[in-house]
Length: 215
Image 1 (cartoon, rainbow, N blue to C red):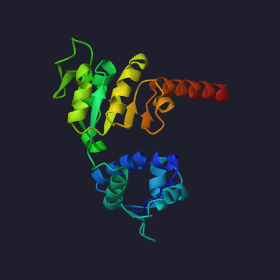
Image 2: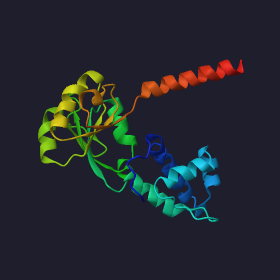
Image 3: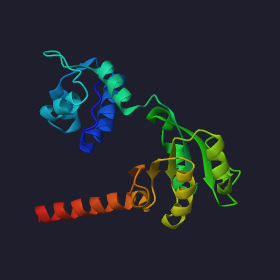
Image 4: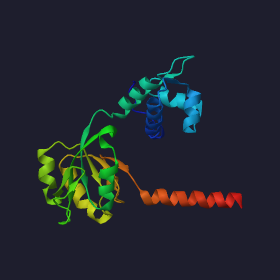
């Protein structure tokens, strides 16, 4: 695997798709796949597959294609899924609880080590084996435990003071479900924003365009 700091985000954002499709093929017993076959499964092109994978070293063999288990392991390594970064989640309302219950953190590179909320009715409750802590304990927890990332499932208006605590504790990596733009305040953070409303509006636009096209 080669290290290239100039790899575009569009390529990086396709890596999880490679991971998913290769995992499915591996689980189905496939041993090798050509770039054309992989492209057909992913709705892409063979040249796009080769260009993407060549950013990290290629991995294919002329006349053979790609070794599925090996390529799966390579993509997993590129994504860093074996690193098991320690993460805390803030906001254990409906969204937060759903994230805790349904996201396979362990196989996606993270150990979810603590949950925090300010709601007295939630503090002390158990979500998938993790006890919800009072958010007033956040600073003391982060200063005495290793925390690599924070998952923000908070309302927008609640994020700023919590983000400040996390930032001051040295945390620079965020999975952000709120609409608060962390990069406007902190220019050295790594943020993955998840905007469900944006995705829904994009779907609405595409349906509208499709109806206009076919009417």
